[in-house]
Amino acid sequence: MSTEASSSSPPQKPIAIITIGMAGAGKSSFVQRINSYLNTVPSPSSPSSEPKAPYIVNLDPAVTNAPFEANIDIRDTVNYSEVMKQYNLGPNGGILTALNLFTTKFDQVLGLVEKRAESLDYVILDTPGQIEIFTWSASGAIITDAIASSLPTVVAYIIDTPRTTAPATFMSNMLYACSILYKTKLPFILVFNKTDVQSHRFAKEWMADFEEFQAALSSTNSTTDSEGEPTYMSSLMNSMCLVLDEFYKGLKTVGVSCLTGDGMKEFFEAVEESRVEYQNEYLPALEEARKSREASLEATKQDSMNRLMNDLEIDRKNNPHGAAMDKWDPEDEMDEDDEDLDVNIRDQSTEDRWQGQYIDITAPQRVRDQGVNWPRPG
Image (cartoon, rainbow, N blue to C red):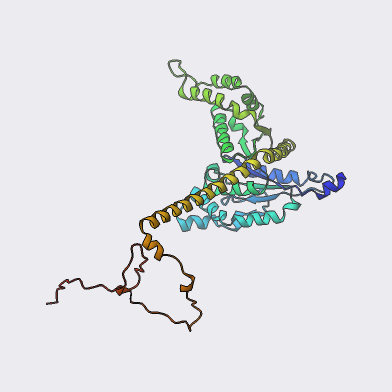
C-alpha cells in the first residue's frame, strides 16, 4: 500500500538557489564548487542513482570567463558591451540595463526550466557582482518573485570571511543580509566563504552572544574619541547588535571553502531544511498575498460599478425625459450586413435635442442663423 502511495505521489520539484553577495565574495567560485560537488555525489531524490548535474543560470552579463558551464547564459542573449555603447552607459548602468532586457524574456527561462524539472534536483542562479544591481532593482525583484512562485527557492548570501573579521565590516554584512531577508521573505542561508583562509567560528560567536561582539568592538582603537567618550560608530554598532539579535535566532549559517570543498555537505543539509521552511511559511504567505490581491481587484471593480450605477440613478431622477428616450430598442438595431434594409434619413438640425443626448462632435453640424451680421470681406 505504501509503495503504491509513494509511486502515485507527484514528483518533488527542484530547489532554486539564488546566490547573492558583495563583489569579490566568491559567488561564481561558489557556484562552480556546487556544480563540482553535485556531479560527484548521489542525487538526494534517488540516492541509489547516479549524480545529477544542477541547472545553472548565469545572470552576470559582464563576467569575462565563468568558471562553470551555464545552461542558460545572459551573455548569449544580451551583449553587455553593445548595450554600453548604444545607450551611452557606464559599467554599472550597462549591467543593469542588460539585466532589464533579459528580464523581459525570463518567462522563456522558466519554460525551459519547467521542461527539465522532473530530471533536476537543483537550479542555481549566479547573480551580478554588484549586489545592489540585483537586490534593489525591478528586474531582480521580478526574477526572484518569478522563480519563487514556481519552485522552492532559497537565498544563499555569500560572505567574504577574511574581510569580515573587523566588527564594522561584519555589522555592514549583517545589515545587508537582514535587508535582503525581509525584502525577499525567502528561506535564507548565510554562507561564510573562504574558510580555508579564515575560520568563521568568530562570526558564529558574535551572532550567538552580543557581549562577545561588544568585547571585540571595544578592543578596537576607534571606539572612543580624544576625550574618552564612545564614538558615534561605536554606539551605533552596539545598538545594532542588540537589534539584530532577533535576526540571528532563526538564521542558518554554514562555513564553506570553494577551494577545498569543505562545508558543501552542511550547506545542502541547510538547503533541504529550507525546502520545508518554504513549503510551510512562504507558500501559504504567497497564496494569501494572491488571494488578497484578487480580493482587492474585485473590490475595486465592484466599487467602480456601484459608482457608475449611482451616477445613472441620479441622472434618471434629474432627467426623466432623457432617461426615457435613452432606452435601447432592439427593433432599431440595423444589420450592417443586410444592404436591402431601408434607411430613414433624418435631418437632425430640425429636431429638438434633449438634455444629455449623445452628439457626435466628429460629424459636421449645421449652425443656425441667429441674426448675426457677419462682416463681409472689404
